[in-house]
Image (tube, rainbow, N blue to C red; front, top):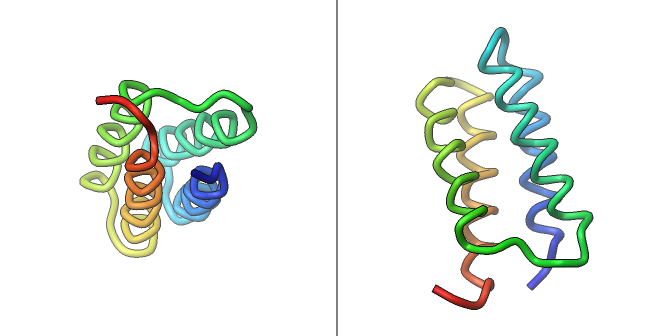
Length: 89
């Protein structure tokens, strides 16, 4: 399992934050920062933490449109793909 998926998801969220504004922009950026932090750690995140990020990204996908929406959806898909390789649950 590669942390590269989390890095890619973080970058897609940075792209999305540039296409958004206001509170949604801040929330997207916070998710991007959190995923970048997870990607930089040696320890793998657990299913619960990844599920919380996926829920937050689903909410952000509903709150965005256009380029920002596409980037959030893509980031969520990358987190989901990463999560499939996490042992447990």
